[in-house]
Image: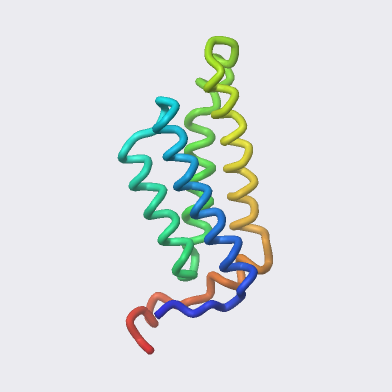
Length: 121
C-alpha cells in the first residue's frame, strides 16, 4: 500500500495528524469546532499517513492559512473570553506543526511516495 520511507518521519506525520483530530474534537467540546472542521482534520490526518509526495506541504499550507484566517479575531477578543487564549496557543502549535512538515528532514523523506504508485504492490 503506502511505503514507510522514514519511520521517524511517518511517526511525526501521524502524531501531527492525531493532534489535528484531537484539537478539533476539543474545539467542538468548548464550542468553537464544527463537523466540517472535524472532517477536514480527518482528511488531513489521512493525507499525512499516506506519505504521498507534496501532501506534507499541502497540509502545512492549510494549517498556516487557518492560523492567518483567525489570528485577528483571536487577538482582538483575547480579553473577552478564555477560549481565545486556547485558540492562540493552538495557532502557535499549528505553526510549529507546519514548520515540522516543511522543514524536518525525516518528514520530508517520508513524503516520497509517488502518486503513480497508488494501488501497486
